[in-house]
Image 1 (cartoon, rainbow, N blue to C red):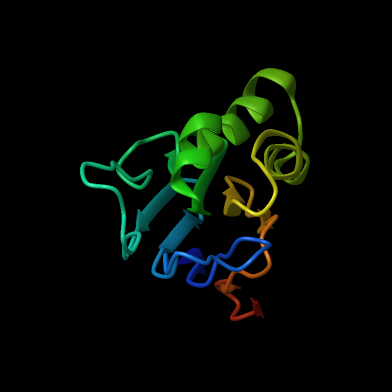
Image 2 (cartoon, rainbow, N blue to C red):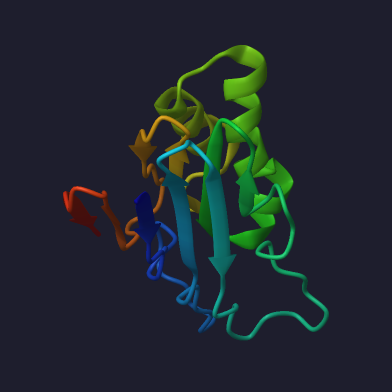
Length: 155
């Protein structure tokens, strides 16, 4: 039996309302760990309304919005440009791997120190089934459930 943590990141918003009609609604991320500590992550986006022609989002860039190694699995949502510049997902794993930070410390550091305020939310799970869902935005719909059916939901 596996342990699955998921988050519907829909609703990640800036601190101030967008005046040009842009919308950031639509990202859905999932991170999972099984009983043997195998990890997986996935991220899908609904896109950015009124985006500039030729804009490349952060979802398809491994290390920016989605990343998995043997320590943790990460899925991010928010402002793609900020997430790409920070390589947010990879940096959480890197802080754990190279500095020895805990899952919560590494994720909090990236969200609070490396990515501009109002631009990112993360869901992160470790190979030992720890989970954290930090954000620096006004909201991020998120939830998780464990194999023993314990669950939490947040906005």
